[in-house]
Amino acid sequence: MLQLCYIYLLFITYCCVFMSNHFESRDQIILLLAFTHRISPLVIVRKEVLSMNLKRIFILFISLCFTMIFWCGSASAASYEGKVDGGSGSTINGWAWDASAPDSPVDVTLSVIKVPDQSVAFTNTFTADQYRQDLENCGKGNGKHSFAITVDWSSLEDTEYKIQVTAGGTPLSGSLYYLSGTYSQTPSSISSLTSNGQATYLGSFKTTAYCPCRACSEGWGRHTATGTIASSNHTVAVDPRVIPYGSKLLINGVVYTAEDKGGAVRGNHIDIFFDTHGETRMYGTQSADVYLLS
Image (cartoon, rainbow, N blue to C red; front, side, top):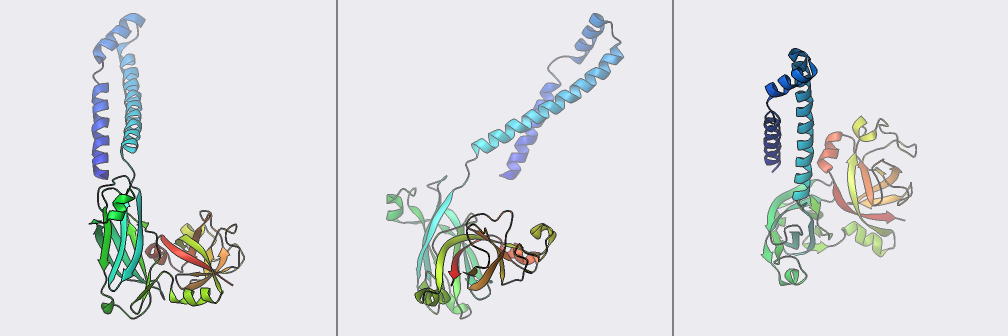
């Protein structure tokens, strides 16, 4: 689609330049000006060349502006929505759709993430195109937007996993974890903590990653806003209006301390510190459940 946009831009641009050179005969303009104002035709030619160059630049600029306005206005942005409903046996169920194309199926990407180290154990892309009456009844297009994804748990290491499903890069709602044949909405470590009143659920937050490099830390390196030295698996940047400094947070099974802030960290957004830039790129942007430890 992007290549087609570029081709369209070039086509419009060249058309405008071609037309600008054929509005009137240059020779007629030069002779008319020379006769009327008694100016040397050579002087007029120079002025005419400059005028035509400026004219071309102006037309190029206007054509690009109108083309981009047309493109942005005509292209409808995708609006993904969906939910991971749950799991049973080796099957994970849910739905996903694009509100801007309500009757078209969308591709969803399943990621099975190890809770202890947050590494991806399995990932694959599927199409959410199965029919569900309840989806059609609640206005989700033609109702053909559900999925049932099979995971061979026996081929994976015996540990706890987080199941994440995205559509167009947008995480679907609904938390799902798997451990030893059992699915739950919270990790096992959280279940015991919440039952004992040691953890409070703060909600689902947008989580990103940063490191000591200049691009990520804006020249601060490992120095945090609270005066501590940032370290991986420990430091996170928060919006102190939402989460006070010093708070202990449980995110994806790891306990972090709110020690830093970031220019782009606002509201329900947490930036997790990593040692290297490569790790930050691998982490990307994820949706994570956040718990405040007492």
